[in-house]
Image (cartoon, rainbow, N blue to C red; front, side, top):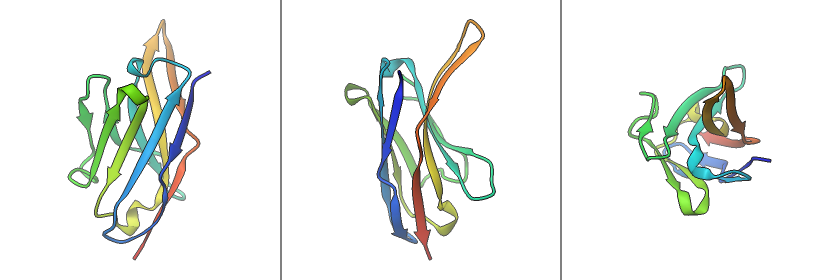
Length: 120
């Protein structure tokens, strides 16, 4: 059974930094591209960072230059370093493991989410 365990959320002042961690267990880590999504109250869940098994990264413009995703394959862990946080970054942050489609079936898994609150 694949499980994702997130940590590192909390309350931070505007301009501050946080580092989120997510540990995957139950399946080989290198099988997965790893993502971080955010969901603010009343809004859809949105992708804010992605890293492939080979280390290729993607960010939307909204976080480019402020957020950095990385992975430590030996520890089955993905990180999200968030700098210069702003009140609009306040959301629940979800870790997502994406193995892609196998025989037409999507193999992916979600963490339980961790709250990030940025005060002005």
